[in-house]
Amino acid sequence: MNQKRRTVLKSTGAMATLLSLGIVTAEQAMAAGRAGFEAKSLEEAIKALGGSAAANDQVAIVSPDIAENGAVVPVGATSKLANTTAIYLLVEKNPTPLAAGFSIPAGTEPEVQTRLKMGQSTNVVAVVKADGKLYSATKETKVTLGGCGG
Amino acid sequence: MADPMRIRAAEAGGITTVRVLMSHPMESGIRKDAAGNTVPAHYITTVEATHNGKSVLKADWSGAVSQNPFLLFKFKGAAKGDKVQVKWVDNKGETRTDEAAVA
Image 1 (cartoon, rainbow over the protein chains, first blue to last red):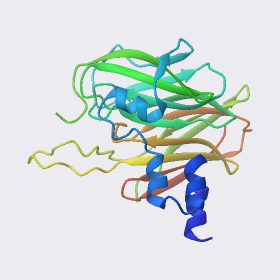
Image 2: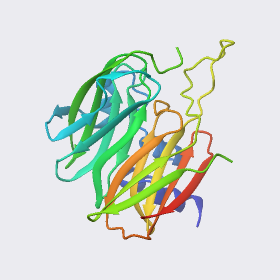
Image 3: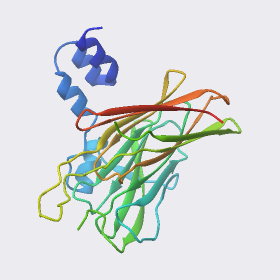
Image 4: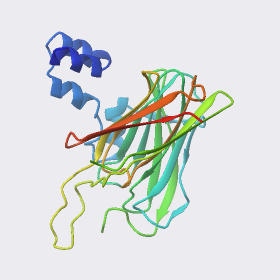
C-alpha cells in the first residue's frame, strides 16, 4: 500500500479528502488532529476545537476538590448527550490548557478517565462534541503541590 | 523496549470496561532537571484501542497527561474472551501495542 493511501486511511473527514486530492500534505493532515494543543488559553483552545462550548448539565467532569500531588490528578468526564463523538479535557491554568482529546465512535460509551498534570489550582473543563456542537462542564481543583516539576 | 501495558478488560451487562496502565515518562518538555536544563519533550501523542479490528477509542494526548498514563474507557459489543488491543505512539515515533482478553 503506498504511503499516500496509508495516510488517507489514518485521517478522517475533510482532511482525508483534501489529502487524497493532494491539496494537503501528510504533515498537515496529522497536525489537524492536534488542533488546539498549541493554544495558550482556555478560550483559544475551545475556539480551536470548534468555537464555543455552552455549559450543559448533561456533561459531567469529575476531579478531586483538593489534589495532593499536581503531577497525578485523576480526572474523568462523562456525557449523557446523544451522539457524543468526542470528549476533551482542559486544565485552564496549564501553559497549554488542552490536555487530552478522545474520539468516541458508535458503540463506545461517552466516558473516559485518566490522570493529568496540573501546575496550580485551576478549573478543569470537560468539553464534549455532540451532534457537531460543543458543550462543557467545569470543576475547580485545588492543587497543593504543582505538577510540572516546579 | 518500553514496559508492557497492563490492560484489564471486564464485561458486565453488555458493557466492557477497559483499564490501561501504560509505562511512559510523559515528559512535557517544560520540566527542568536539577542542573537547570530543560528535559526534552517525550510523551505519548496518540492512543488507539481496537476490538476485533474495529476502533473503539482514539485519543490525542499532550505532555499534560501524567507519567505512566492511566486510561479507562467503556464500550459495548464485546464478549468474554474477545481481544482488546491498545496501541500508543509518542512524539518520537516510538510505539507499543499490547492486548488483553475480555474477562
